[in-house]
Image (cartoon, rainbow, N blue to C red; front, side, top):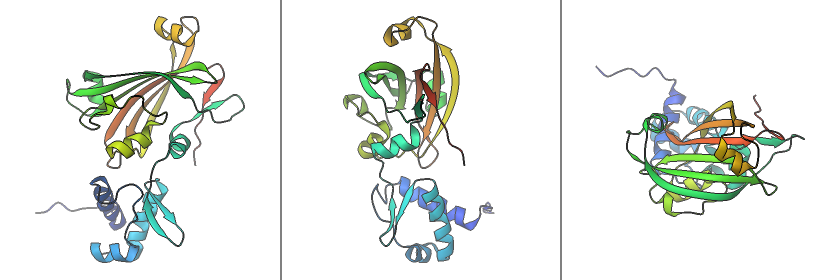
Length: 238
């Protein structure tokens, strides 16, 4: 007997649309068929399609343009910074760092990396270490890991742009839709202290992030250590 699907009908339509988006049927910037056309194709009502599409618009996967139609969101550095970069200065103004130095290598996934990215231990990953500056001063130490099979050739694309998520989408077809961030306080070790120009043991803000694509798959594990004397991590809820 077939397993019953207890998802609401609009959620089933949403899942079907996500699967087609993930398969590349509608690439970034492409216009989707109209609600009525999709409804006929999926054998549901236009209202059900509209509710599914509205939920994807709310999540930033799609964008509606009045009088034009519904389009797959094309990530830009501005959009990526607005949605995913949350540093502010003492006045509450958003701060956008620049990449100062960058080292990219391929390494086998250790146990923790394998767990975070959902890959096999020993599978090749791309490891990116960046020092990012604010107003010319090194302020952020960033370590990024992605599965090499997911983004082939990424290690040869240095120097990478300041905003990585638009690059992932444009060059590798990977759209980051959501992130899980965990904040903690850590002390600067000797190497971090030297790079940031602070005494060893200086408190740093650690933001550990898992980024997810359309299907919920983990596509990036990022650890960022920030100088916290004049920076804060701001999140708006609701």
